Length: 111
Image (cartoon, rainbow, N blue to C red; front, side):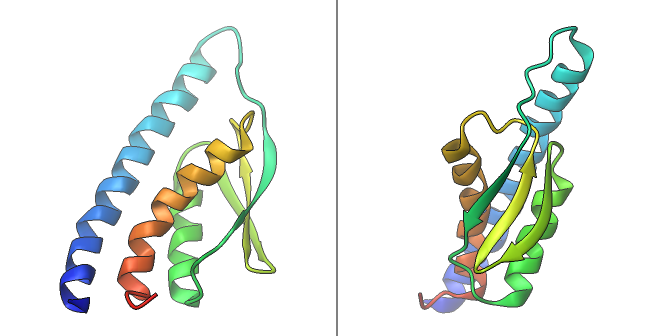
């Protein structure tokens, strides 16, 4: 069961990251190309469920590769992220948790 869960987690992670990458690229491009800017930058802390340092590093790098977000630090079990569109902090947290889910299945399938 663990192996199956891990095998399913890999395409889920790649698919989720691809969707987030495309959506955020379009959102940043739209904001840059239009005369009115919708950006509301803010630093947001996202409490992590991950405990494996490799998984946390992969999540942090995935967040930084996504346009409009940048991982600043891991502080006290939370990922500190600068988000370009952070008018709704819960939405930003939910987007990053969607990336965290497949990593939990991949690195911590017994949780």
